[in-house]
Length: 340
Image (cartoon, rainbow, N blue to C red):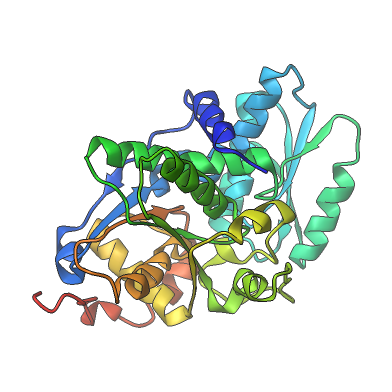
């Protein structure tokens, strides 16, 4: 089980490579909602997503221990692929990435630009089998996208860094909201939040997860109590959350989540458009969908809640952008504050 100490050590380990990303607010959105929303912009991270934190933590720890591999392999839908390719390049190690042919073209191109070899397969299952086989070669390290304690620790630095920034602003979060694909980012948030509450730095802060309704393996897993696996490739704008299932490491932690929401495709497109417009940031649908969870959570809360939203990435293909803007949702502002 990943501990808060692991997350603190990861933060020190990766600080020289990973950017400290800013927190944004929209005064208009806060006015409309009647609450204070703080957006952690990991879309501005190197490689364009939070995934670099986990990949860097794995390899930096190997370097610390004098156990760098001769080669790394990984399976990914895109953002983890770029992260592994970038991290491997920092240590002069070749990387080979395995993914389904549904991978975002922009993410695939960036992965190859960072120096990795890329192999695509007709399904995520076949890609996962191929990377497993490749990992059996001597001197090869498999860096999984989420189901590893060191990956979770690296991703946990997003929440730790965010809470440190809010502390400097004299703000205590009432909720932390994260998208859920494989559960690494959400797991890191849960572990960090628990530690902060134990230390008296936070009070009754809740951690809330969100995933696409069309790729709702995590929601089904939380309901059944066992890991549920998606069949086939889900049809969702939120490609970063289209993982087949949680892993044993992440599932054990995600079971402690305070609340969890399934978001339909209209809501995903709606909030992607509005966050692009309000924040002037290029944000993936995977993290924009968290605002649907925020809207649902604050609907029965007293005014002026402080909500931290983890914007996980900003790598979007032209095809996905076209789908997002098929309907103009900016005609319908997200007004929930009766005084707005």
